[in-house]
Length: 293
Length: 305
Image (tube, rainbow over all chains, first blue to last red; front, side, top):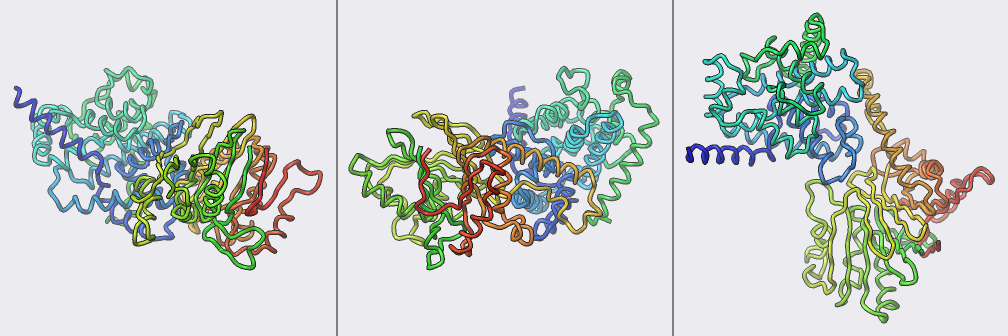
């Protein structure tokens, strides 16, 4: 038992050490490089790229809310962050994150395909924002839904990149047992992506709403905090993306949403189809923008 | 409270026949507080050299030199005078150096002290006799003793740059040495047609929020010393994104904040005495239209509050 505990400690230390230098996702990297190295890059292009990558988005939100600035109010909107920090600061940060990715990609194989993972993250972000819009959430808050959805699975990245062999076993176990991936992660890795993601959100100071979303998106029943709407909306968006196979982040057997949750969000099922169509359009546009065929 | 201008230029020192009246040294301000004559220096541009000489000549006989130096940022025109500030070579000198450091940069001590290396200068940093403490600043409010408080606010520059608000004995001095109006640059692009209108809207909202915060920061200041490197037409035609303001914008901001006296600062090195004198007249509000006093910063100028 003690040995197992020590091995788990060791694994978590490995994953934690990785949090600071997490790379941007591979599908966005070449576009990131091209845009950031162009001195005349448009701020709108820069915003679009960041909005498509959970790691870049997390890092920008983390930086602007970090002790480097000491701002008293949390800034959750990406356009606001860019206008405050200036294009150069953003470009430097984005570029350093992207360069790391190129180095890391050569190091080892990954269990999850980052292209599909990226599609899944973006789908959940877009879905959460669309659902928020449908539910009449204030426009200034809709951005938080998007960000929370985009980064909800960020805890998978360290496991996928630093412990690819063990993580592959977790993916296989989920497949064999027909269970949701987070359950297999707990058994095989010893920590699930929700807990891992929460460590990242805490370290990066992504804000309470995002932290809670990451930590509870597979455990709505246990959630007691004040961001229930955003946590539930992202959880539902994740379920939609998984069942409609928009991208793939390892969860082929997601657990059903409770009817209570669906009632509380008051979303008619007809809206789901409409949302799914819109998300697919967004994904198509993103691929064109990034030059992925 | 007393303010004396030792350097008013931006970018680079520019001595010569065209800069005799307003001066050619880069940013340095001396503030004196109360009967104890407490010394605060803002920025260590080339103007800090004559200030240092003045201190060693007149203040040293009353005891070791003690000063708080607030750096607005670490662009070279704001720190270049530091190796020539003579008190750093005098044992007993005590300096507190405050300033912001940009994300991923070296600590303040290395950025400022790094100028004292053989490749740039004949004296090594380790050879200095003064005792120097560095303090990395973010947005905050500090009590530096003797009843003086300093509030800091990030401005809009190409590098992290702080504005300072000094309050003492009911009087307020604000500085905004290098700053550009916050603006919605999502509308800049030539491809505006393809940009999500929501993005443009959010950019505009963010710029408005930040502008309102800046105006609040200068609120009712007795003196505001503000970047005025460009004229409005220069700014609009070619200098957007350079991190500096136009004179016209400085006046607008000062009016909005209810400032009593605006000192236009950080003159472009290309600006001659004759041009500055003419622009100074143009920037003054029409008689009777406002109480705001406007003047161009001039080396040697002194303001007593």
